[in-house]
Structure formats: C-alpha cells, structure tokens
Amino acid sequence: MDSENAMHKKILRIRQGKAWEMEDLLSVEAPVTIYLNGNELVTLLCTPEKLNLLALGFLRSEGIISGASDIKNIHVREEEGLVEVELFKEAGLAEKLYGKRTLTSGCGKGTVFFSALDSLRSSPVEGNLKISPKTISSLVDSLQSRAELFKATGGVHSAGLADGEKLLFFCEDIGRHNAIDKIVGECLQEGISTEDKIIVSSGRLSSEILLKAAKLKIQLLISRAAPTTLCVELADNLNITLVGFVRGKRMNIYTHAWRIT
Image (cartoon, rainbow, N blue to C red; front, side, top):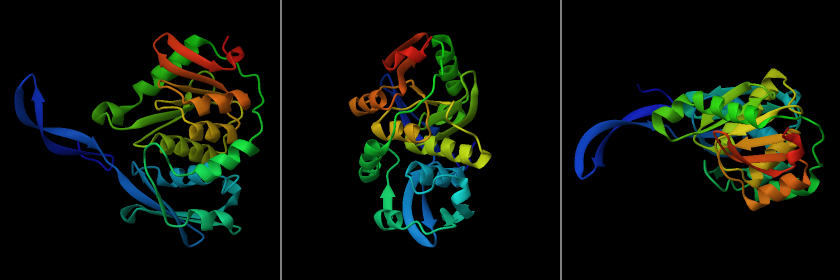
C-alpha cells in the first residue's frame, strides 16, 4: 500500500537463476529544509513524517536550543518539505555555521565542528539506573516488533525511548540520526525528562549518537548493532553504559557494566 513513507515500484527479481517482474515496497527518502528565524539552516534527507519532531530534536541535539521554551513558533509545510522555526532569541553563530547545508541520511552527518566541541564540553552523566539483561533483550524485541515500515521495506532504522521497563516513544526513519532526533523532539514536545531514561536503537552506535545521548543525560544506550571506537571511548569518559549486538539473549556490554544487574 502506497503512503507518504513507502511506495510500490516494479522490479526484476532474480532467485536461483530464475527472473520475474514484481512489485516491491520501497521506503521513501525526501529532503526537508529547516528555516530558523527566517534563514535557511539545513536540509535533512529523511522519512517524511513527524517533521516537527525532527526539527525540534535536531535543534536540541545540535545545541541550538536548550528546550521547547526556546521555540516561539514552528510551522510545517509538508508538501513543500519545509519546517519554519522561530525562536524567541536570535540563533546567532549556529545560523552562520549551518546555513544552506545538506546533511545525508547516513553515516557522516557533517557535524564534526559541533561534535568536537561537545565532546570537550560534555560533563559525565550522573545516575544509578539499573537494568537486567532480560529487560534489555525485551526492549530490543519490542523495538523490532513495532518496526512496521522496516518489515515492509527493510530500508529504515528504528529508535525508542524506554523507562527501564517498556518503550515510551518509538519512530522509524531512513537515517539513524533522524530517528533519534525525532525521539528527542517528542520528549521536548511532551515535556518528558530524559535523565532516567534509556535510548534503544537498531543502528550503529557512532560518536554523534553517543553525544546526542549525553546531552539528554541518558544513562544507557542500547542497540542491535555495533559501536565505533570513539563511541566507546566517549561513553567510558561520560559515564554512559553502552550495550551493543543485542540479539536474543546475547549482548556485548562495552562500558560501565555496573548498571547491568
């Protein structure tokens, strides 16, 4: 079924030397441009849903806003792929650094400047949240079970926010960064504190993902996939428990295993 997030496409499928035409379902990739105080800030390539949350989460993750109270107005123009955000104050340096940039949906988002500063400025995350391996597996299973767009297309990432027992928020996007930013945006919109929460992801854990978690004071970051060396180093320095390769009852705990009971 065609929608704004998935569309049918006629393809040629080959299996064991046999070929036939059929329809396949593809995940939609679309550009969305964020305007900040009337100035073009950045274009993100994403799954075109929850664009208001994506904009809020991106601005928070990049340190441009500190919370929803900074936002005077936000207007989504879906058909044009635009999100217009007005702040109570001028964004200043951020607008100059980001103006008219396109960030890919994949690996390097082009935020090295901010990430480098953030890694130096971030303070260790405090908190004694504990969780069992059984609950970790359950949260990842729950993430997978809700991933309807992935089941249909195989072309998106999932992210969720958990309270130590269950998923509170969930979303999918072609970009793993975008998926987490949408979760961040939903937290801002709903006024949910993240200091005692857990981020669960389907994608690779990179330094940028880790720094997003650190800004939110997230104590545990969990994924089915692998972390990078810099992600592990930052997690160790910032007192974040990093769990990867969660597959069934198997998992790797890379940092601060004392939170795993």
